[in-house]
Image 1 (cartoon, rainbow, N blue to C red):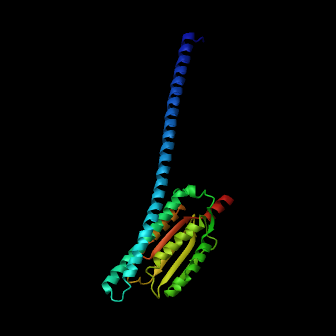
Image 2 (tube, rainbow, N blue to C red; image 1 turned 30 degrees about the vertical axis):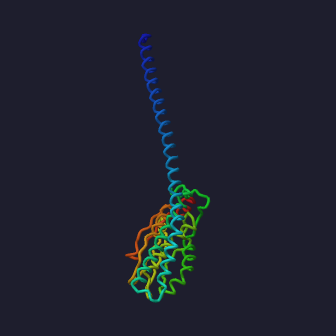
Image 3 (cartoon, helix red, strand yellow; image 1 turned 90 degrees about the vertical axis):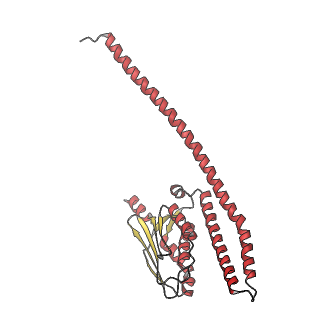
Length: 269
């Protein structure tokens, strides 16, 4: 059966037109993608520049305020020294001194957060690629930290109970994980009284590591709460791909981090 040349020509023409339309669509799509990529790069650069400005601003605020705060603290202490000073005035001056301490703690938190941002640790995946990120034995880190807190517990007559798994491995910065743990213990120390108990549990739970720090006992009657330290700890744990919950009212904190043990086992299999 002979096919007319005109039919073949029309078929070829249709195919050519279809291919040309697809080519033009692809070219237009590639142009749009290129424009979006360039726009994304520009926005990313602007965001990074803003992040650097924010970090610098936080650092400068801390440096600028620390000296006048210290001057106010010294003045308050000096004014409370004369023996003829009334108890009411001394109480107000003592409260002022405590408030200055809290502001300084807040400035320390801002300084740490600014430092984290400067190192580019706001993104957990980027943090885990940093050269200072290593395998951390969380059980050893916990024991080392508690040794430093032994005198604090003993002086306040507080007992310590522990249930800790061995070789609990996570990926991250030992320095900052220790910093987070110390901040949590520091917050709990605000409510500790003689005869109470701090119970710490550390265990592997499938693909994660979980640590529970619970205060058991009556809290101190006068408690000055400060979320600064815990907020910094929460940021550090978040950077490591985990989470932290709890507060001083319940006296309980729960921390969870990705387990390096599970990653190593899956790679071996």
